Image (tube, rainbow, N blue to C red; front, side):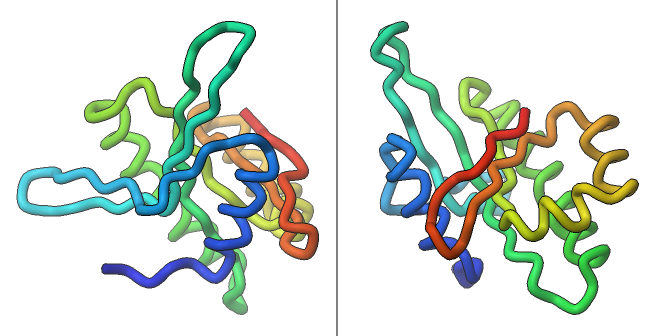
Amino acid sequence: MPAKDFYHDTVKTALIKDGWVVADKSLTFMVGKRSAMIDIAAEKVLIAERNTQKIAVEVKSFLSPSPMNDLEKALGQFMLYFDIIAERDPDRVLYLAVPQATYNGIFSEEVGELLLRRRPELNLVIFDPNLEEITLWKH
């Protein structure tokens, strides 16, 4: 089993504060003989619509000395999970959770803006690690 990301529990707490019901285990899909494990699965009941919204959240801390390296790894993992979810659980929306500082950093630079512009499937959930709260949902 892969190690939890540094901010895994922080994001889980932030989602709960935001009204999400968070599963106690990761979301795992088998693809042939391989398994893909997404950090957090959550559901939110939308009372007004009487429907359930389902999400999966891949948490990335961006703590290495190279934000570009972190971005490359995060994007590759996100795209792999996006394709798996599209086939195996199409009602679930995938998000990449990043700290506010990362969003204000590399995602606000030209390379991040390019990704957000060219990859409409790249949904972000931005969180404040100190307050353990979500600051922005970016679709």
